[in-house]
Image (cartoon, rainbow, N blue to C red; front, side, top):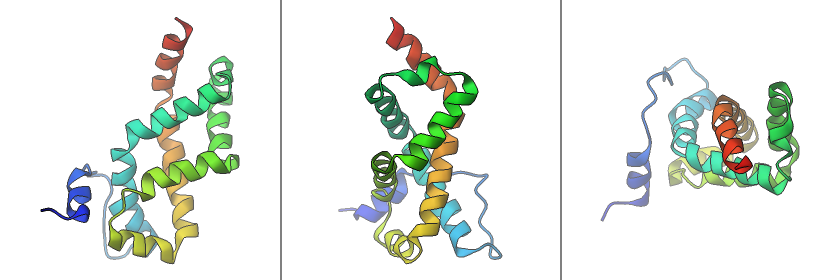
Length: 138
């Protein structure tokens, strides 16, 4: 039977642009080796979680300008600790045991990197939320 860690690693997409080299910091290495692939793997779940967040907050997101929508995403991730912790759990739950050990050694800095990547992923998927708004309207 395959171990949990080998199954998790096998599920992750490869990201050619996430370069690994010996001169990078440990945090940058963890970001490119672990965080980027896990967040890409969890993309659909992260989008669904934000859609749920929008719905729980009375869909006001859909009435905002693009700039205000980007601010809304910023604020949701930065200020809503319950939502932020939920997003972190979706990512951390995909770590191998070894990765989790590395993560806990510097969780504060890695959490910042993690949330920056999640925030950018949500912003990059604005079109997804626009399509969802059309579905909500009908």
